[in-house]
Amino acid sequence: MDIKAYLTKKKEAVDRSLEKLMPPATAFPSVIHEAMRYSLFAGGKRVRPVLAIAAAEALGAKATGVVPIAASLELIHTYSLIHDDLPAMDNDDFRRGRPTCHKVYGDAVAVLAGDGLLTMAFEVLSDPKLEKAISARTLLSVIKELSTASGVRGMVGGQVVDMQSEGKEIDFPTLEYIHMHKTGALIRASVRAGALYARATKQQYLALTRYAEMAGLAFQIADDILDITSTQEALGKDIGSDLKKGKKTFPSFYGLEESRRRAREVVDHALGALKGFDRKADALRELAKYIINRVN
Amino acid sequence: MDIKAYLTKKKEAVDRSLEKLMPPATAFPSVIHEAMRYSLFAGGKRVRPVLAIAAAEALGAKATGVVPIAASLELIHTYSLIHDDLPAMDNDDFRRGRPTCHKVYGDAVAVLAGDGLLTMAFEVLSDPKLEKAISARTLLSVIKELSTASGVRGMVGGQVVDMQSEGKEIDFPTLEYIHMHKTGALIRASVRAGALYARATKQQYLALTRYAEMAGLAFQIADDILDITSTQEALGKDIGSDLKKGKKTFPSFYGLEESRRRAREVVDHALGALKGFDRKADALRELAKYIINRVN
Image: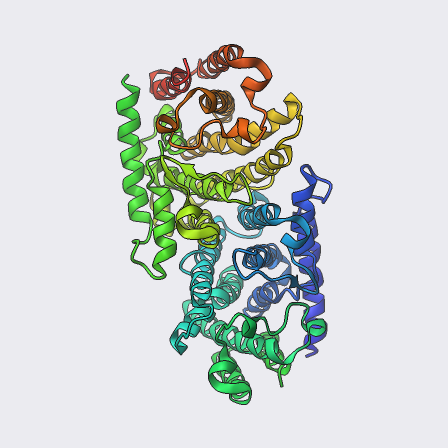
């Protein structure tokens, strides 16, 4: 399968959904709607939404119904980027190829744009119109999955430890904690949300969870490698920023080559988790391979 | 009825629920759990939770079942206080009688503590254990109510306009917009959440909505008055801070006496909305009166 064409097609479906879900930039008060849209439509790859869709498809479900759930994942992801970039946090000036939200709209609006996007995700998931296609019980389980992955037991917890670790000599388990929580949790929730939508069996849910954990880890190792090897132009955000802040990364523990090898190994584990799935899971397989192709 | 005893009793029930819902302060990473608890257990009056409980009771429902919903309202309210107090926002040093969250834990942790509390609210509302007592459909409608009230169409929108208005000559409709969105939306959602829990008829839902809008407005007028007339000790937060920041308030448009008269008038409207309710709505009635007793 042509994974690039697949990514483009699903990204477009997600973007159309987001466009419909978001109030127009002219809605009052316009600055917050502009700011939310500025960060949301900055050309993100929509990795999390695509994972949710691909997981649902792997179980034989149609992509159409899962798109609003996929869109809500991108709302949460974008909120986390905006808050993480704040001067009080990671203090990053560039993201997705352009100045970060607070650089354009100021810190206060950036905090509120993040708050607005996070809240909007739950507004989207509780829309009674969705109940035509998705049962209330399934929607609740998706909300549980996403809120747990985003909160103190997930993304927020990871960001706290990440910040506390800046400039400190951390050990490898701490780095793993940061990865698993700061990025891994939402990636896992994305795949699981697709699985819940498609009414996965317990066994399928666990296999997809394993896939997601391995793919998420590979994604993070790749990100760490790209922070060193890529150019700002290619990456769209500050490069070498981990190094500059004295942040420990995979390559700082294992070097570039060993990190690349580990990424390949982890992707193999991800593919192994999909053994019991038929060709409908090919998009998930190709996505996992695509992650390490970026760094090899 | 003894409204003070009622408030104390319900506040205790909400606090017990919050204590159970929140991870312990020692949970890893502890700083975020400490920060969330610091702001959550700072002696707030739990007005929103009590309104939700009282609304459910007004319709004949038992308080027990609605308490987790009530608790989630306080999580959202506390998140909004933490973010509003940030230096980039209202820059307030005191809240509920002690230094604000960012004064104690720094800006980054304060942003994340707010994020964590907001997310936790939806985690609480999507807990499958709740489905024993509340249908999935009702929980979804509560999530819709709370997320809409908290987001750009509610609280976040109100805070944006509030910030944009600082030091500017705003007109009265703009002040009303700020009140209705920054505080009114969540107060209305609190009452409605109780109504949804208690399976209100359409008519009951609309009457309680009217009550909540009037009570919320009275609450805001009272708050504006107290910002001028109270002492920091009695209020527990910076006083005269609206004035200092050049913020327009009810008294700055109408003076103290006329503001007091309007508060009484608005409370009368709130009581009028409850005409069709029996004595089970007495707590709601007393709560509305209690609001203006603070300023008269």
